[in-house]
Length: 299
Image (tube, rainbow, N blue to C red; front, top):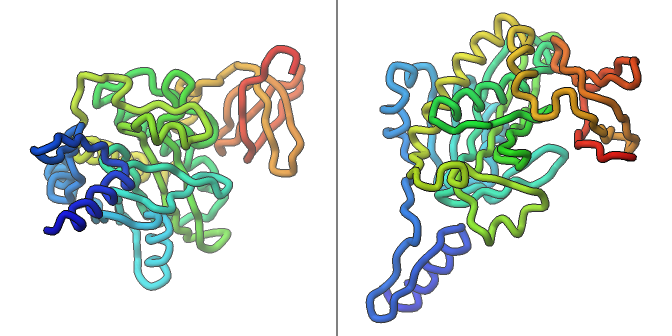
């Protein structure tokens, strides 16, 4: 390779989020080791459960959810898990972008077909949050909490998010594209570009070298088990566990509604459909969408 080509490759690597060390007269190396995503390694870690899901690993893609949605127009994506090393146009709720870092994120989507319609799936994002929290706990990461309707938190900082996109008939069947973004290692430069407080798994246990292939396998195993039960029983069996994990349970909160108005109250919990229930001075109010934040004294 020419020097010019080497320079181009190094710039592309840094743009993708890799941190490089340069030593004059010797060369270049990654500052942090990277275990690249590998389908065979994920399947080995899954063991017998690998037969229950089809796994595909992409180096770079605009959005794993967008790709599965495109494919669903011409073929089944049920039980297909697509994970990307880099997402160039990852999506969060309300059209927000999701920042992913090469070697430092887990960004994946899973297609799942349900016989029921959208009403039955109202609590699906909450149930998926439980699967993620269970998987992280099984891998030794403690104090992972959930925030209604689709965030994972560590000490009130966002460590992951869920985006579910539905298509199909109102009464079923329907297809859910379950998109997940999880921060494994977010470098300081990337944190400055994120407009909220974030955390990553490396910060929880700095001495640990995290194998993303094994972690994804653990998450996939929990997701498959949970989705199979959700398809039978809906959200109701998961309601109590979700409330135990809710970071804002019984806290005074403010809910920003889609029309720009706000509602205030104390979080009483969620109902069997996954709706947030607020206690507003003895009056119970139910919300199926909105942005929730802690309410400061006097607000």
